[in-house]
Image 1 (cartoon, one colour):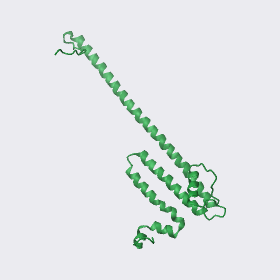
Image 2: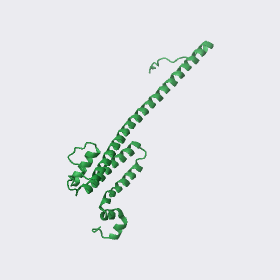
Image 3: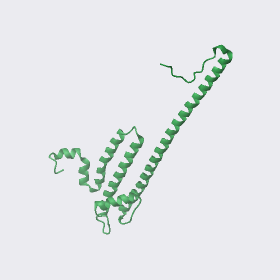
Image 4: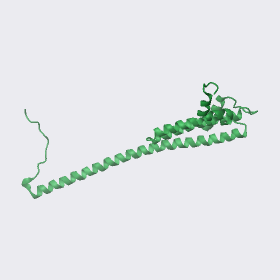
Length: 194
């Protein structure tokens, strides 16, 4: 805000940034810009549901990772026996917590930090379930599409087989009823001499 030439215009256009400066606990809400960007990407990819879901999940993972990192850093940085003191430690802790690996080298010590950890763990498990379900749905839709194409081709072959059988029966009837007008069945075509 201090670096901008028109401070009042900045304040009007960036109220969330002003709030984040005034109230440090609001800083993670600045990630709402990421959410709006993801919504825009989602609107553009509406024709492909798997792409849409992948974009949303990737955005949710990044958003939760950053939100969890900033929140736990804010809570644990000044804790007397806390060990999460830098943004690098906070991101590492968030990543290991979301993936449910939890090495144990970094852990929150405050009650609010532990509550954030529980939320991040549950979110990580839920997102893993969404990714797994998305992959399974993609495989199922692919198999269903292949199966539908195979059934369509089988139906066409059956229809052609019935049509050929009906034509043969019709030719046999014609041959029986009028032997002089029996249709000629074309044989192999021999090349005509030049």
